[in-house]
Length: 476
Image 1: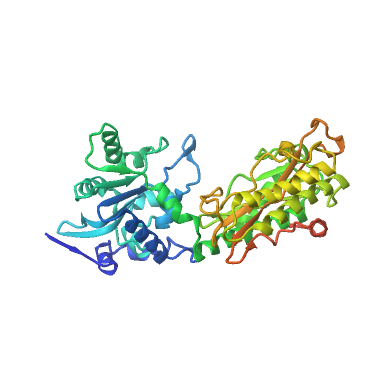
Image 2 (image 1 turned 135 degrees about the vertical axis):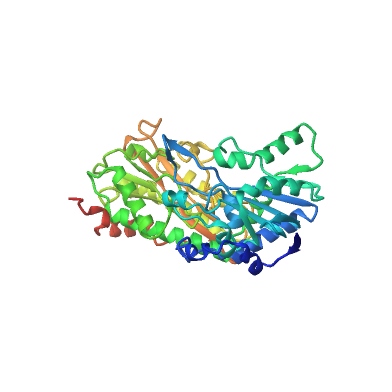
């Protein structure tokens, strides 16, 4: 039996020849992050853990919705960040020292990155779609070595006895079940032994390390988030042009989701929020069943996910195309607060200072209208009860840090929400909820608003709403 290190082009020769023709049907999208960038990320992890350690990452579990229907599959963030691989029941081992793997009956190779994938299965693929297989994992994903996931248990045992001192692996989450749970059973056993001080290796969680890598986005990641945000902005344009009294909130939801998918987004970034009037003051409202009436203000917090990267954009607009005096007053305070915050954003700025700029405008604005009775203090927080924003990336609420740096993307989303019968508030302001949310890319000198194509000035919104959008077309 031979044992040796092989480059990628040589490892491809171990794949089943019949897979060649099938590969062209697997990856239809070409505007994806390159295999070379994923390789660079894996190399960075191996450099950070050192030669006396190995790391194990596993895919997201498949989740049942009801009966025999699963939720639409979505890969786990860190696994996707390191591989770009979208199939379930997959595991990645990174070992700077290299692990010996038997790839055929007569050949063993040594590789420092091994992706375990589902085997090709014509019967299963006829039901659920084509699989990458081992060759797809190497040729299209670009890992040095891909093998069928049935080999994981034996390779994991070899990893444990390869002379390492540290094993980086996250705890097996409670929702892992079925095939993935069985594949990870030796990992769970080792974790259990380690908890009983019956392990020679020190266990470490790799998540914090990968999260640190994800804070600053690469150019390719920024391109994905820019695209996701452009798609979202166009959907908001169409919603403004389409909404009219008598529609239902769910019609707006359908319009947003149609606009996302028509432009190539695989998912929405989060359940679409379309709250009219009394529902506009509920921060994460998503029932979307109310009829929209004349005079209602509509708060729409809807954004697309594109190639795994999620945007987050919110607009607030009048159902009949014309803001009332009171709606304008509240809206302008929120817009001024957002502008004040954005003006502070630049490399080196502290997020607390960015937030303070928005807080000051809202506090002063609500006091001037008589909605709050104190100019100083936190009484305004009764009507603005959330933070200013958050990082976006592979997760709509992504990993970030307090001090801004070029390459970070943050939302800026101040809001004012005045529920019916709010104490001490004039009834003319009841059921007005306004949030304005944009995605800001921190540049070398300041910031860039990636969602600027979605109107946010009062005049621009009212002008957009004079148009007719795709949501006005009858279905019959």
